[in-house]
Every structure is written in structure tokens, then in C-alpha cells.
Length: 288
Image 1 (tube, helix red, strand yellow):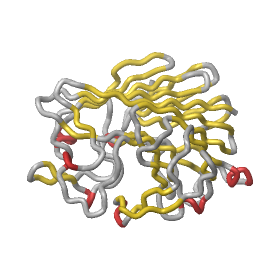
Image 2 (image 1 turned 90 degrees about the vertical axis):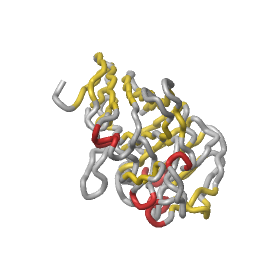
Image 3 (image 1 turned 30 degrees about the vertical axis):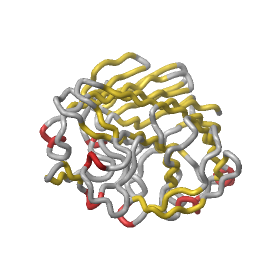
Image 4 (image 1 turned 180 degrees about the horizontal axis):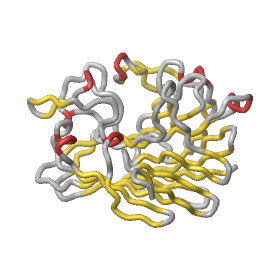
């Protein structure tokens, strides 16, 4: 183990998990690299963990009571150093507890643990959010992995196939990343969403309160199966021409356009009572 990451091995599968942000920064099956390698000029992350909010906040801040806190895009977990809570050759658990830096952004006691477990062709991420404090707190949690989506003829033949038919009208994203009340249509072919650069020209594609708890990314490298527990929203994002596709799982969303409320009033937040915990998980399985 190096000072800032852990390498996992199982069969022909390899993964590297960074202690900074508890982020999966590499995953391969055989010779196939599945996670995108960051490029600063395009996108400088690989698979950030989203906590305690998902998406943008209005003005880069949240309000709790009469105070404002500078909590911006996707919260702060992705930039924090996690501690090692346990590991084996094919798994690792990483933990983040509230500290002076997090309380300046989010005034609550919390305990967040992520466990990664590698399979011969799969990777599972399990998150536990625990409230060790005396008061309830609101939170949202999300996973934001960017998968390789290489250029070439097959790129334009790629698609997402949902387990169930989804609503073809998705939210428009307003200025500042806020969620508009307006909707736009995406071209669904039954349960399948054809992928193209044009789909992401303006914004992410957000399927809120989705029917599907699983989907399959059929891309140039093969098929990637994704199954989730306790994530109601799917978010798909890329940049036109960029060789990655983010398949994101969120429990909450960005602030609605015009939202001025308290963090407890923010739509989609989970309220965790003192002494209780909640679990969220995702499993990714690759078939060449």
C-alpha cells in the first residue's frame, strides 16, 4: 500500500482506491481499462463521491437556520482524506468523520464509511452514513464514476438500456447548475437511450425518481451492468467528444431554480435521526 491509495486484486480484475475522497481512480478487467483517466483540460476526476449534497447549490452555499455555509458542487467528501478502516486483498473500507474543516461547511456530526469489494469481473461500492450526534441531519449521497467511452465508429452505436421504461421528459438544467421546472425530451427507444455527443451538448441527462434499479451500458468495450440500492435518481453526463461517460447514482438533486430555503427544506434530502444509519450501494459488472 502506498501512502495515499490501496490496490485491490481479484482474479484478472484490478482496482485502485484513493484515500483522498475514497475515490476509485482505476479499475480494469484483464487488459480493459474501465475507468477514465483524468485529463485536467477535460475533466480532472475519475469517480468522485458526492456528500452531503448532490449537484449545485444556489450561489455555492447552503443555509442552516440563520447561518450560511459555503457548500458548493457535490459537497466536500471528494476532497477530504479518509482513514483506513479495514482491508484485504480484494476489499477496503475507508472512513470520514466530521472535523473542523467539514463543520465550517456543514455544521453536523456525521460518520461516512465506504467499502469497495472487487470481484473477478465486478466492483461493488457500499456506503454507510451514520449519525453519531444528538440532532438529526439532512444529507444526500451520490456516486459519480466516469467510464471509458472511446472515440470511433462504435461510439455512435452505444446505448444505455434501462431495466424498465423511463420517462422521456427530463429536467432542463438552468444557469448555475440549478434544476429548472422546465423539461426537455430525450429520444428513448423503448427502454434504450441511444448515446451521442449531441445528447450532452448542454447539460447532464437526469432521470429523477427512476423506475429502474439497474441498467446496462452497451459500449465499444463491451457491456457494463450497473445495479443500485437506495438510489432513486440516475444521472448521465459527458462532454461532447470527451472519451468518458459518467453513470451517476444520486439520492438528491441540485437546488431547484429560485430555491431560497433551509438545507432541511431542500428537495430530496434524507433526514437521519441520532444514532441511526442508512446504506447505499452500487455494483458494476463488466462483460467483454
